[in-house]
Amino acid sequence: MTAEIEVFRDLDELSHRAAERFVEAAEETVAARRPFYAALSGGSTPRTMFSLLATTDFALRFPWNSTHFFQVDERTVPPDHPDSNYRMIREAMLDRAPLPPENFHRMRAESPDLESAAHDYAHEIAERMHPLGGAFPRFDLIQLGLGTNGHTASLFPGTAALDETKRWVVPNHVPEMHTWRLTLTYPVINAAREVIFLVDGEGKADVLRRVVYPESPEDRFPAQGVAPREGQLRWYLTESAARLLPKRS
View 1 (spheres, rainbow, N blue to C red):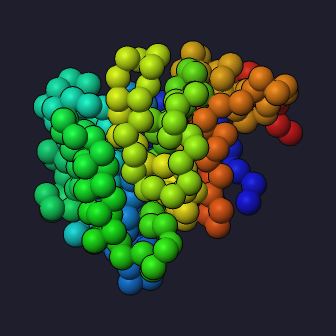
View 2 (cartoon, one colour):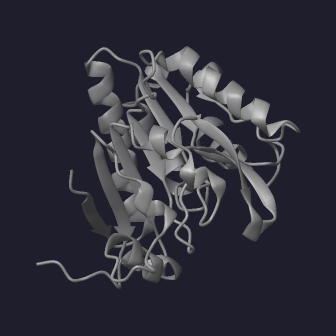
């Protein structure tokens, strides 16, 4: 399926559209008599969207009791650390939204045993989502970002997780950052019904162009591995991020 690209004036406009799409997707899913399962990324760009979802205009429409949020990835820090993706999501949304506490599923990346943490998180996904034998879990919506080096989730250039084809969650060593991360893998991301990239900022413009419209063999980036097999891929971009993309008629 062809990716849909929408360009917005600024981060505020992008965030409103993204929050609206989250509500729409959740309403559609619950109307089909299924729980809504979504996976959330960290970073600075989605913070505004998370905050909007907790405001009255959106919160009153959102089916919180039928929603389960998971994490796309997490840094190996405690949950109260300033670099924690969970802490950002909690401060922006969870502290103010009526999501039942048990409906947020946190990656425990502060664990000294990351292999066990990855296994436990995959087990938690399975226990909640009950995919049929041998199938990957099918999230209703996965929200991703884009790094200036073309990474998404914690799938960084040249790292081992890029080659994972079976496991749902893996520890991934990121040499350029001298650290480890926990991350969902391509097979899980690409099994989703819908994936939305949120991209903002002039600093992302060059890599965004090369990811979406590669012009040479050197234009190979982890974000290009995101291609939902039976789902919709959307790019929500600010004008500053999209400034180098070809003009569309």
